Length: 243
Image 1 (cartoon, rainbow, N blue to C red):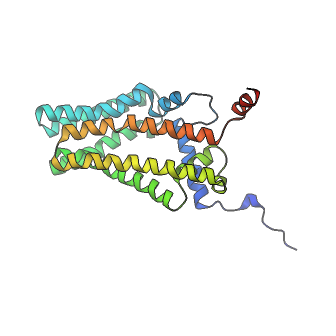
Image 2 (cartoon, helix red, strand yellow):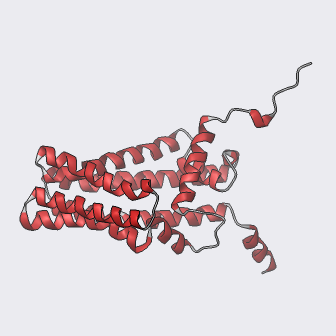
Image 3 (cartoon, helix red, strand yellow):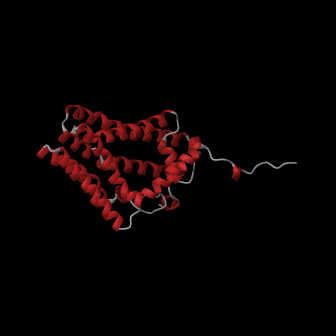
């Protein structure tokens, strides 16, 4: 008589593989539910502190200012990519993981490629538009098919896997959080595209900076706080019972 295959040998589903990968990426980015840190500190760590802000903003700011002042597209692109290259060298010298160190430089080079080819400065922002479309669509579709990405990530971060789908409160909360993230990415498109089509590089770049890290940080903090309410830590629960 044959024995049934143990559950441990069951092949993981696509959602479990995706969730584990996203959860691992979130932890590597600094989102650790086991760490006893404040919301502000967690967000600050995810964006990389002052260095992360400077690395994110300075190459774009160099492009905007240089092009606005000189109208020299080649010079603006050189300064933008050059700034990213300097930050990459600093990261490598400080022994950062090569992928993390090179990602900013690769992004800057790719973004510079299209305007270098077309001669249109506003095309520097096309890669960002594509990224926003991809992320916005992914979050929106995941919510529509009842597999909200926020739930998939948080579930694996909290060690629950996809069991949250049996809890109506969690399903509803993760649905709306995923919709909120989708709206963030799509709102960036809605606000920035008119300036792109009009060729207003200065305003387009300014709006991109304003709607970048600040908006991301606020929504990340909100998501963290809401998720914490869904998964209170034992120490928090004990403190609440004693009070």
